[in-house]
Length: 380
Figure 1 (cartoon, rainbow, N blue to C red):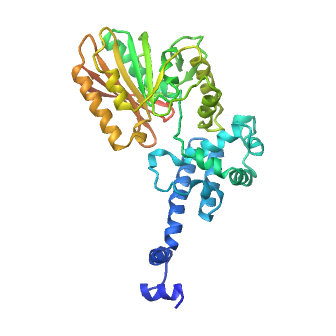
Figure 2: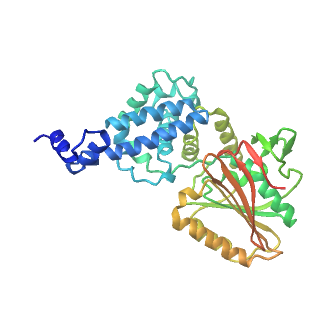
Figure 3: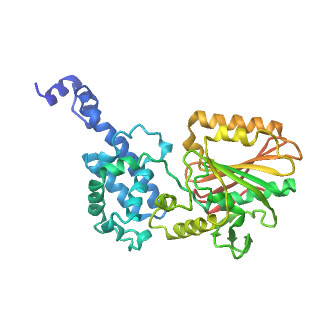
């Protein structure tokens, strides 16, 4: 009896694809097909997201990658084994960032002609075939690169966080000590040295090389508050040195190549970081915080902050962070206040919230795009 006859006998009804896959699982076919479908579905979901966010290039390439994975082509050779990766690990962006890294390094000149980040015109005609050729030629290196976590030091997110820093400065009347978890290269630790503009509102040094244009949809952040940062420090599991060639390459690779404004903003922030030190320790967030917050720091307002981090921590990491902030908050004093400022994904937008101690009051401040703009300021 052949497989189809055996299936028909087992199912005792006309065949449909779903029941076929279920019934032939014992023969190992479904076990080979299912992982490809898991990955191709994730690639297609991200393709749709990228198109919605204005990246036609990544929309086309991720769709082509999904088709290639289903065929068992070179994209599958790179991504096989990752079907069980947590969704929060951003597998599609790890993959695209790995390819972008090769392009930026001059190792894929044919593909570079399509990538605006390398002077290309951004056209997508014929790009699919070139893309797959590059993948096929670099399978082994890409298999290694795709294991690295996404390192998006998205400078624009400082625009969404700025209001929280200023509210705490106004509340306490103290200079600020800022501590960032998941800091990557620590670019956002220099947030007070950037220039922010939102219509008729502005904050920061007008001569700053880092200029963040905020599309302010609602509300008015407290741009009338002035403050001083007296200490800045961060931690990351795999920190990046923005002053090194490899560090710059890594940071650039995770920015979408057809979004020149984001690339220009990143370059300006990297240049600024070379002049203004902000140490980033290689450490896990909760353990690092326990050391930094071991004793209340008198005479400064300590602000712990992070942006689009929680999805990468896992359940135990999130619980550890919340536990440590709660412990430190209970020890905060009026002359040594503590705040927890966070910008975290809530689907298609990010929510910005602030918890302050003593007291432990939590406020929702804003909703923002995942890269910091547009901004709906909600706090009063």
